[in-house]
Length: 178
Image 1 (cartoon, rainbow, N blue to C red):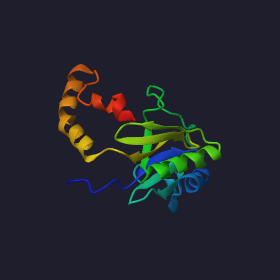
Image 2 (image 1 turned 90 degrees about the vertical axis):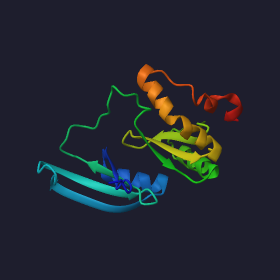
Image 3 (image 1 turned 60 degrees about the vertical axis):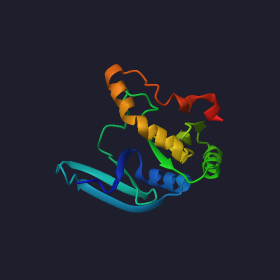
């Protein structure tokens, strides 16, 4: 068996309607489906929910659950806020910059663009506190080949030392960052 693609990624939301409207307005996603039940199909637990689905492009679906009878949403406080995030790709740097401009104009705080050498990205939060990233690929085929050639060595070194391997330190060199 080999995975064909991700069917959907689901997160919790505070308010399903607010969440759908935010993603439609700020990220131009289409609202494609809503499912509401009083019982969880997989567990049969009595737990009413609204499950909404948004088209994130190219067969990618972003979904949210509103769970009105559960304790308020919270995050994993043992994990830094920057770690758990959803990164979505845009086609060009102009699109990335235009998205930032629209988000900032709407009063949304945006970090970036940040240059990661093989892509540039901006970061911001949705109304539920989920960290989002918009990224545009900037890596050359040569860069990607260099990274591919060292990935297993890097992983093995990390697993032994828990220190950042230097196989791809060239990504952080000032002359590459320009």
